[in-house]
Length: 484
Image 1 (cartoon, rainbow, N blue to C red):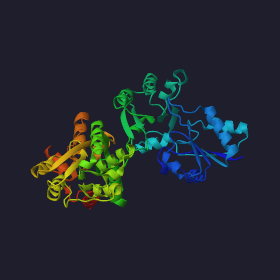
Image 2 (image 1 turned 90 degrees about the horizontal axis):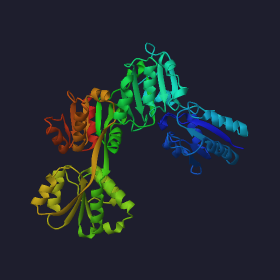
Image 3 (image 1 turned 45 degrees about the vertical axis):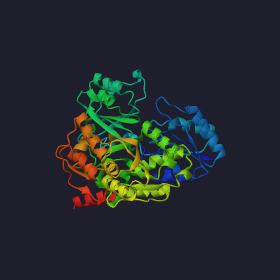
Image 4 (image 1 turned 180 degrees about the horizontal axis):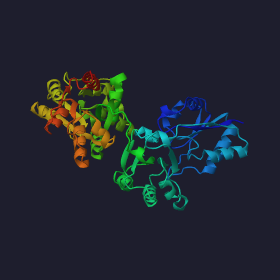
């Protein structure tokens, strides 16, 4: 008979799991895990370990509790080490108690391994302490999954301290109206922290009387933690001086380039990239007659990655590309292209679309047919140069970019320097600021490349500097200098 370990996986960040939990995962024979357990932790399991998902989320129960109990008992009869991996702590609304009772009844040995509970950690991730000596000397954790007649809102409304509702997003209108009916003031601070400790984390603060409607307007997503009380108005986060506007991959490169000073960065706006249906159709059509082309030109590393992914999805016969020569706009694109195609035949000395167009005109001219793969909305100067040279080319607008603010308006307001990785990032940030009423007045702007700088200049803004060369490493170097 093996042992079942009821293990708390923490609030979502795999680095917040306990050392003991990690050691158990690393020697587990069977892991039975929930949706809220960080997926990266499963990578620590031995190759022979069987991992079974029994995730529970509102409206999407993939396994009944009785089935999970049976799975744990059967697992202990077969394996030496069974890990029941649960998000947060197993006994804070995690049904750990029900599983322990089932194990006791079956005579199965078990051990308990506490986890960092999301009731405290997720508000903290948003800079909200659940207690404060002058504001709240207690906090109360309440499940949002409860019937109307089971919850005495009047009693909770009279409590001093912080109210923390777990799994309460769908019930938020009922929670807010119940607390107001129970006598809590409408201007009581409240906050919703959505998808805490993930790259999609969002924070919304509003008075109790407005929080439900504002949450609906902003389309906050589950899982979420709701905080009500004076502490919800606090913001104890460290606010980095540099706000990055770029894709996840670009921000990751910036963190690496900043090295020990990465804490000065904040990813204030994520630029999401998506292949357009028209772009996908055009690429596949071009691939079907790829023998007509002599060169393929990529104006971003994202274009390379997306093109490679589509070819892989279509199981495209890559030997049909053997005759091609490849051109890249800059070193980042060239690095990604070498990994995909094995070689890069043209890289301009200056990493701009103008320089790339000039280099193509000089090296290719009228002697070859060129396929250019790029994003929507890019600069047209390269094509003007190619037209003047009488070059024969086709262009595919393969993908588009959209911006998503990843910080609260308050944090954006406290970020003094905004660093843009692309012209589309400039357009997205200013469009969102206009739409939502965010003020960018008084901020300082820096950017990569002249195309990005021109997007700022069209708005009457001269960037403090434009990086040359146009790389994340050079941007990181310049940002470090600004701090000295």
